[in-house]
Length: 141
Image (cartoon, helix red, strand yellow):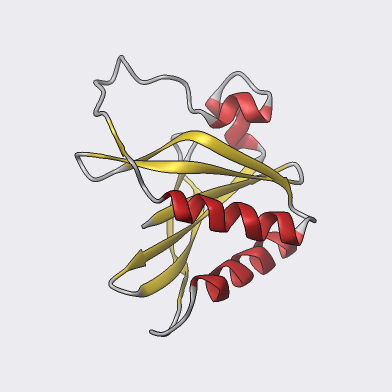
């Protein structure tokens, strides 16, 4: 399971993360947009996105990819414009182990996983434990 969020100008953007056959993810509809200050709305948005899971999305060739779904919600026209003022985190779960993954800027106007910014939760942690923690991270970022 993978849930990615973006913090930009006081709002959190949480797209549904579709999974492509090749094993990577891309943001698809629906997308939640919530003020970072609204803790309860953030909690609901994360739980809703996680409940939707990672639906299968078609594999597209390089020239078929649409603009990232996030752009229309942020009111910007290009990924570099969005990324310039944004930061990102992801929640992942594999075999009952949850992680919050922080990302750092990459040279390609995007992000790469920051291996020094990964928080692994003990087995037995609940999704609510993870959501509570990521909200705290976002609200202090």
